[in-house]
Length: 82
Image (cartoon, rainbow, N blue to C red; front, side, top):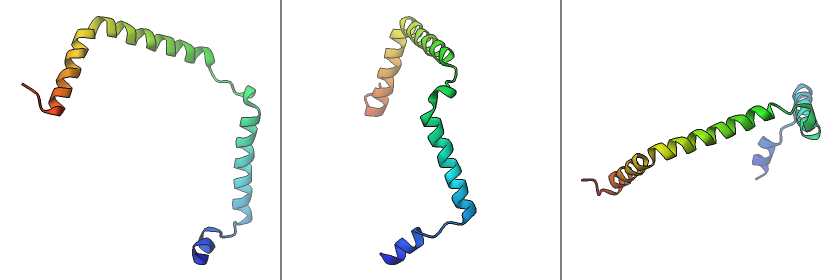
């Protein structure tokens, strides 16, 4: 057990420690100040609504064919294929 801990808990070089701390501080500052980088919220809302609309339209048009394909796939896996 002692050798396992010794191999895991090696001392870090000063440069590695600085890099680690810099990365940690950047991550913490992003979480602490989320308002600075909001991203494209209206764009994501538009993409989500358009995707839902496309799925609904395809579902309405191809409902019977999708059911048939799904049933054929299940029958092929279970072994009840004609």
